[in-house]
Image 1 (cartoon, rainbow, N blue to C red):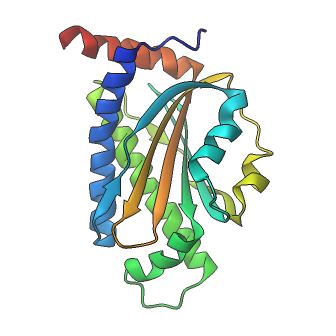
Image 2: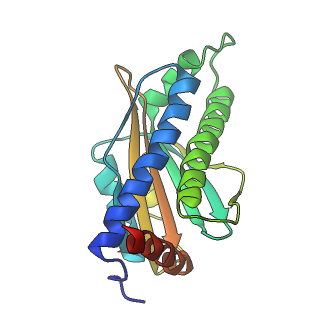
Length: 206
């Protein structure tokens, strides 16, 4: 498969779809945390497996300590989503969500799993619905990829099973807070073909 399978029109339409989807995810996060959520401009690209680590490094920059949560999805579209949280922001979640019990690593972990489930579900369900997907997406339970560690320690050693993937990215930041989450979605070869077919239908009616 060619890495140039998507045209500029495909990427433009997809970014519009992601904008709507991320807006819905951001609204769900704002309601959960009772805070105003800022969204970054969405990014889309077809990437090769050997670019995986570089993508993570460019996104995180000087961020030293992170926690990352993974959730797989499948059916009409399949792949994996990774939510990466700054450690300083993780420590804020306990107070932001109004928990009165004492902060603990176990509680922080549960909060991140729940939040990831909400963010990824809201985003991907919206993308699927906008593309006219008649098959409901299914999800694995979210799981911790790495916790309180340097991204180089984990992502520098991680291998991926795909050769090419459609990469989607957006960041969620809380106004006047330290909380920051980067949501990354990787859809491998078979989903790229399906996505292009769905986007072609959009482009035909524009």
